[in-house]
Length: 108
Image (cartoon, rainbow, N blue to C red; front, side, top):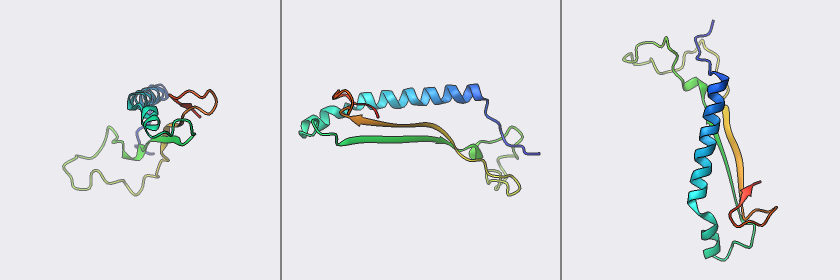
């Protein structure tokens, strides 16, 4: 039986939403449309930002982990199968928006 930590789906959903909110806030605060405007590029569809945030369950410590003072305690166990990464957020932002023409951009 595997001792891998299982992530509660409700907590995972909350984590996804909070990371998305923080990424949205950081992009809004970046004021990238003014940079494009400064260089005369705002009228062109030149800036497309893609980001993806992944959570690696293999790096999470289980509650019954070996004493951390042991040198190999943080290394993955060879008998435990690897769990694929969880995609938390995957989006693209286009500035200006190709649909509405908004200089602030939109998710495309």
